[in-house]
Image 1: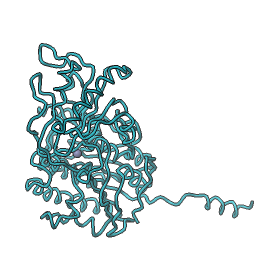
Image 2: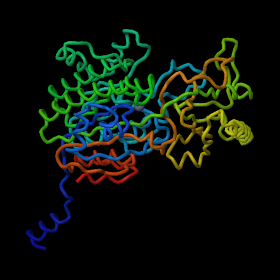
Image 3: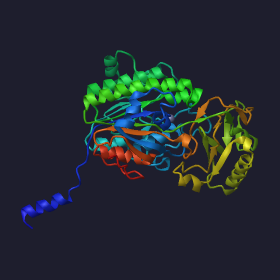
Image 4: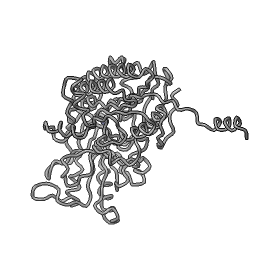
Length: 444
Ligand SMILES: [Zn+2]
């Protein structure tokens, strides 16, 4: 073969050049797709979000993961795999004796597969993060303001100083002229603060892949219910944050793609279900003199509208049968709001927690209650007006995907999207490689 022929053969084998666009990924926690597509009928003035529909592509809905909870879902958005594979199985880590002060899965060390940050970094892109879940010590993040809190004491700011990219927080505080929001703060003011910090990071460092997480809509939907006047007002203010971020990104990177996602939808709630009550009554959980858990054989691991049921001895068939009989008995009474008792096979089919012996999915309107001591009843009024965390599927739990920018079709409806397809799609846009459990979506 001559040199020219060899060259031609090599060129024929070369892959199609990657798109390699800069990417801004914004998450609005709890944003229901209908709040954007049906904004007019719902009385929502959200021009910046509406622009994604006319000038970009959007999913009619996104099917989430088990459980439809913030941390498992955001980790699927960053990895393209279900919780069974990525290892973030709930918001909080399993803590049967309650010693972890309500600690969440803050640490990226618990993520078992590569993330979009790592994929982008390997492709040679600079990366940034403002408050994305499960981002402490995340690999591949050039400029990281990770999400963490402890008690809300002022010392939490020192913890964040230590865990953020060295010098970054102080640098951006100097630019913004205000302290960075405390990690525990999910208010609209905190979202607006983090929006300003993200804008300052874009202007100062121009990260080619930036993740930004906004919490206040979810906070309001829990407090006052999905679609409440307060939730609508919060979303309208978040819309302004999105407008500012899009403008800042396009100023830094005129060819950027901006992806806007959410992690789950919401159900309105009325009744709290205290799963600890029957476990205590059955002797599966034993309390000490201090009223705290002393020992346990089986334990609910709560995830909002659902709960994993963990066994102290997973291989103990007699214990498993005993717990199964209890759960079936509870589920037989519709007042308990148990929609489904899932087996390990059912859990695996949905990509859920592989260590759970069972999974309880509650009916719409019901929410798992936290441990409130020896005397708490099984059923009470729900302390929140909205919840998620149920098994995915119902329309109310669908989440959002919208994209705008170079290479994205205008006005295209992408139809129903599997959440696991989002990360591979975003990786492809950036010219990065990430193998998820679903093929990338065609955005053209
Ligand atoms: Zn969430």
